[in-house]
Image 1 (cartoon, rainbow, N blue to C red):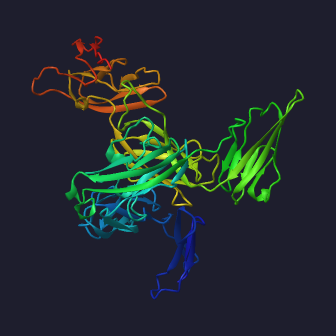
Image 2: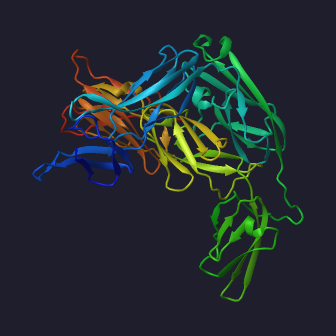
Image 3: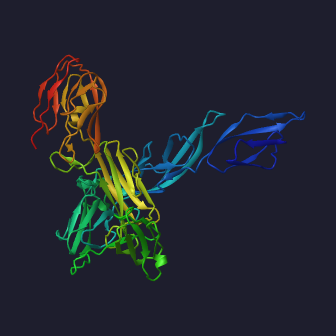
Amino acid sequence: MNLKLRAASSIISLQALSDSSEEDTATFLVKGLVIGQTSVSAFVIDKHGRKITSAPQQIEVFPPFRLLPRKVTLIVGAMMQITSEGGPQPQSNILFSLSHESIASVSSLGHVKGLSVGNMSVTGVVQAVDTETGKLVVVSKDQVDVEVVQLKAIRIRAPITRMKTGTLMPVYVMGLTSSQTPFSFGNALPGLTFHWSVTKRDVLDVHTRHASVQLSAEHNFAMSVFGRSKGRTGLRVVVKTSVPLAGHLQDSALELQDEIQIQVYEKLQLLKPEVQAEEILMSPNSLLKLQTNRDGLGSLSYRVLDCPDRAALVQVDDEGHLTSGSLTGTASLQISSQETFGVNQTIIVAVKVVTVSYLRLSTSPVVYTSNRETVSAIPLGAVLTFSVHFHDSTGETLHSHNSALSFSTNRDDLVQVGKGSSNGTLTVRTVNVGLTLLGVWDSEQAGLADFLALPVQHAIHPAEAQRLVVGDVVCFSAQFVNQEGVSGVWSSSSSALLEIDPRTGAAVARDRGTVSVYYEIPGQLRTYREVKLITSTSGKTMKILWSKSVMSPVVFVQTNKNQPMFLNCKHAEL
């Protein structure tokens, strides 16, 4: 049969196979070459020389459908979301199934929760409607392995055990194997608690990971340690379970513990003469643009002074681009500035090319509270910037690196994480209340990793105000202020439903519906809370709600909606 197939574009290739046993059938092998959409149509020349063409058939070439992560390790009671990449677009819902429903459960969102110890697999299937039959057909599927365990022992993951005074290092809890990361147990319910201590308090400081957020013990699987003064101290962690029968720990143990020794030593300094020794720290194969206070004012020149293999170690061009090679070592860099008024200035700095020993996450901006107390969770609606710092084997921070960062969360429905505006930063936007675990690592060196807990809670109180009856009066409050201690501004998404005083947070429910209450500190925080307003069916009188931070409010409310509202919420003295 002289039947031919033709593609509308070159994103696929067509190869005719041997003739079918049926006279009116032709078989072709279609291979996807480039991701995209095209169409194919068949045509044949009849015995009268006329060309007969079929209706075009749509074809999509898509990247392979893959479930991520490829292997999930959980303790009993912990949860991890399985996500996907590739597959046809736009992608319909993924249907998940389990090989053993007694070991783990899975939701329609891919949330896998450990139920009992064992190994199993989760299969994800992408379906589409066949345009000819109208039936659902499987377009693609993939499978990942799930291991549910109990913690038999724990260990403190510390990248170095000798650090200089004044340096920071992240530490976090791991299980016995490398697959038992904080993702495996950090959100287990009913929950584990993590208690850290040191044997000598004046040597090492231990504190939680977020700026101005003091996480509770159940979220402290990762901490920061600061070298305070020279000496040797033990760093200890005790992991406790509040419900032994929950099965988090093996043999129904009540707690697990680990301890390591950390040496803190003084940085080498010149005392006579008392001068600062300057150095630049770079990782191999990295680039750093040098900048001085004489840029654009004097004539600058850069030169690497004679040293063995200096070309392979570091190079610098006339524009101040300092490049490190694949070797590690130390070189001297001379920077000269020829001034227009006839003076030449020269400085010489050491350039050290060192391997990266660990990375560390830091958060910004700092949030301030009216009572100067730390909060235990990130306020809903906050946008945080996470900066990734790279350190050498002494704890010093590198000035340049060539690491390719990857990041992941244990679920994607509570926070939105993306790459920041500058290299080495992440932006985290909180969109729902709950706990998310964040992991960041070097794509080429899996051992360079850091983990954080991101608990998100409402910042607007009282909690009872999320459901109001028309006529109710509320004194909304939030403890966050700006750096000068000035409170933010209150607003409502609909003043016709909920009228609110922008200064005090005093509000009255005017009509039924759903409204959002916003509290904003310009340039720092914009948090919100959804409020549902209903009409009373019981004939109850107006009630007044306020949080503990507000004294008994003085209230006078106009019953006419066209009149302004008079309401004074006097906050308690702090």
